[in-house]
Image (tube, rainbow, N blue to C red; front, side, top):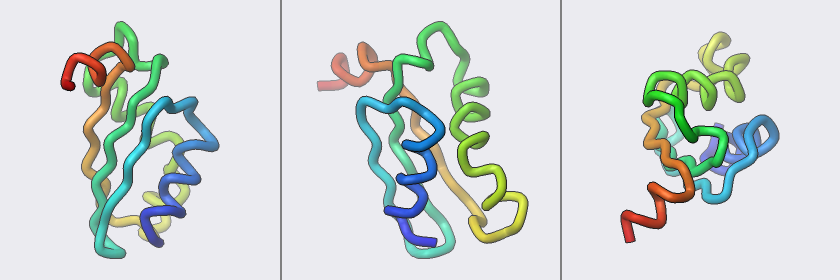
Length: 79
């Protein structure tokens, strides 16, 4: 898998206002900004993103994805 493939999967399953995925082909990191995260804990946010890539995680095609998740307001406040 490459970062763009992962980004496509996340975008297909989650309405994102900002999405950035980087990685080396086996380990990846993503910054995901979505209004869906409002009022949700970090764990629930991560679970929501992981739902979008579950088949790839289950098959081992995607080994590791480190997540940073924000609401649009939290993202804007970061500057």
